Length: 250
Image 1: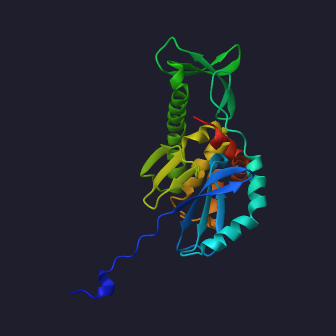
Image 2: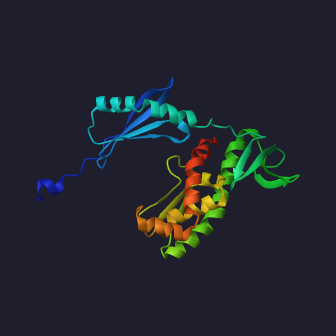
Image 3: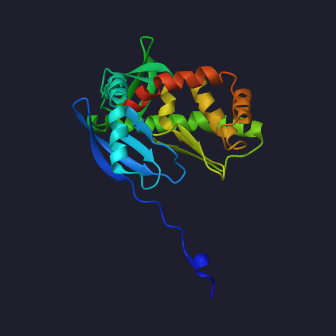
């Protein structure tokens, strides 16, 4: 019989606690997440300013969490005041594709497709089919554009680092723009297709650099800048404008 300490399974982390926190007259969902590696409290605002998340060490007292939130109330109100309104996608609104604003035009005559073209020199996205499905069809269009544009960039940058990507997936992630697993699986938010080409290239270079450097060390950033010389500029653009892209309601 094995000793007891060898048969015991590690306890799973406790489920996140859900509660509501009032900020500037708004009641916002707040998720409290315990993390065994956390040494301090970390407060984050969800994409689009729709939720809050606080990461705490295990068994952190609820009273201390309340005091922490009270101390950061002014910071929360200031940050949330800067979050842009969530624009509704509808005919006449402009949606950026690779940084270029395209006016949305609805033409129900054909079956449900999206056509990227120009009318009198103006870039437009013509959405066919039922009006009720306009937003979903635009989201599907952006996913296809992401696959068409990003997969060749992955091949280029992964080839440069000498580590192949095992898979490339596209999601509508709200917490991060991209990720790389230890097994070499890459994931990207298809919303990045609204950003300029240099920013898209930076994001792909960033995740491909993780195929060799699974960290954010000096070696990682050096490799990232070798793959994408405009890393600093593109990273700053995404920090300034990323929330606005995440706020668009598809």
